[in-house]
Length: 586
Image (tube, rainbow, N blue to C red):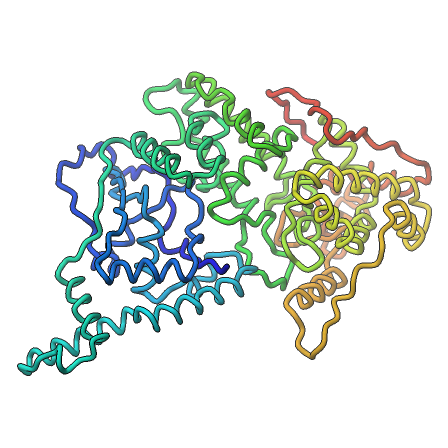
């Protein structure tokens, strides 16, 4: 059954958001009134927010949207709206009733999701447009568009001004709608309950209302209940891109801790940008794709999984594991919460910067997400991302460094194998039936692939490719041929990816792909600087930062025919580091 996409109509925000220009306002003593339908059509509506942890407003069918409009039109009893007003930001948060308000707004603007595709994942465009067309057709035939209502009302006023009887002159359909629009302009309201008190009381109300109605997901509930722990605060801050908010303990704290807290928004913004920027539109035209694609309503859960995976090499495969992590230090004092959060931020940003980023971090591999976190058709694959991160950052800091050096020594071939057999590798997820069930298997496949490449560097690429095919029993992928001349979007992306890879810039040391918009360094390639003592463009080549800084070790391995031993990798083994990590240079 089609679902109508309405999530874009009411933005998300954190209950705890603080507008620094309005701090210290007194409690609002003015009597709050019911929400008027006329307010929904105008700028007042832009003051509304959904709690940031609430799931997407995309669960109503076209028929459900129409049924609500009919109920309101016919004067039937409609459940009330529950809201809370922040006296710091003056924003109004919808605790219950976001779907009802969104349907009314969509009807008034004639925006059923298809006019704001950019808000959503481009991959869902066909589904969004189809649902929008369905609901618009049913609304127009069974209810009437909002513009029709306005037009009928203008007709009614014109007849009244001419001293004519509108009921006789107009059809019953038009007259009813004209009268209803008149009621809107006269102040027709939706029953509205205003929650009083602080944001903590608003959170409590949201939790109680949704728990009793069984509409709150298990993760949403545990996040609200454990938002005071360092992991909940870090994830909330990252999702909010470091925006100021009540994420950290307030009041007077030690100067040392204030220094940490002042840096947290910078950490959060940097991590957010590495994970989710640039926006993804579904069409692959270049290498510049986000590392992670996540719907706004899923970013908190995805964020917690990524933070756990990146910082602790933990796979949060169950709600019990997520709860355990969120509960850590949840009732601890200010010092513990801030110092733990600082350590989480530092490790996550350090490790993400080892993967990708715009800076020239000497530890950065500068991976191209299109190769490592997207399938052969240009569709984001969470399984690939989780497996690569889980594998790369397994073990001690020394083991991670050694693995990166060995990987870089055969990176060109590694990426060719990954590109050639992408569909076979990602099919593990289909067979296993879920992200976490396949992560360890895919990570083991990556480790075995590296083992074969390192142990057979003296063989030709076709020979090594054949070894890998036999090792994993890879069979040729199914043909994507179809009748007709029109090329499908998935086929376009596949052609574009292959063309980009064939014509790409490559690292002068490892031969792997480079996106020049990401972090890179330049190597004195033909003659080392220590010999020529000058820098000129003819002698310079772009490299991955890690390759440039580990050049001697990488090139020594490339020139050697002897087998090098890979660091031990045992999927599922406990991480080999302590909570207080010492971040080494490489």
